[in-house]
Image (cartoon, rainbow, N blue to C red; front, side):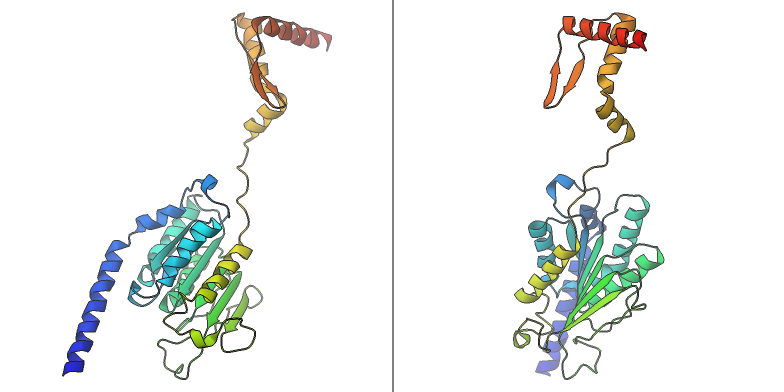
Length: 289
């Protein structure tokens, strides 16, 4: 009776914590990755991490998002796996409105890993590519859709992996020609992570695993590209349109306009006499043509 009551109490506490977690997470947190100030970031991309069971475990996903945002300089947020459809709709909407053109990285743990594959599948239907998918101990993963360019699956098999709960298993792609799959079994030599210190409950927060995830993100995303220059901006820069307009105005209206003359190291204002000389030179060049 003692154990049954305590188990029931544990389930109630977990459900209440889950409800609190889901209520606290709304779609507003996702807007952190939309219309960003590029001057505050270094890498061109978006990282979306996803927590596992009930949204109260896998808190390593939160710290991974924080590290990616602050250490790597790439906009990142963490969400519970129960909001996978919200995440899918958000990314698709942002892409359709041309508010999100950066490469997308998805990272998930346990059920969060399974549901990041669900997100990737929804994005595939909408024609949205995923640059990198990282799964940590997926429990019952579906096949990786072909819009995912590369998937890195870090997992640790257990003796009871026949049961689809609290386990880690390899993943496979729908089309191996389209998706590069790297399954990293921590029990195998060459993983470079001490498997004795890793289990299903701490793999997301394990320092070596987190460092591997951060490295994968860093190696995948490039620097933010320079801002696009419009044709008129380019034309103005090349032909000094500001000076031409000022000269025309001075020629036809005879107003005392002080033009801004572009120089190699900046801009300086010419005097009225300089403007008059520029006007005469410009008119003379037109007559000589």
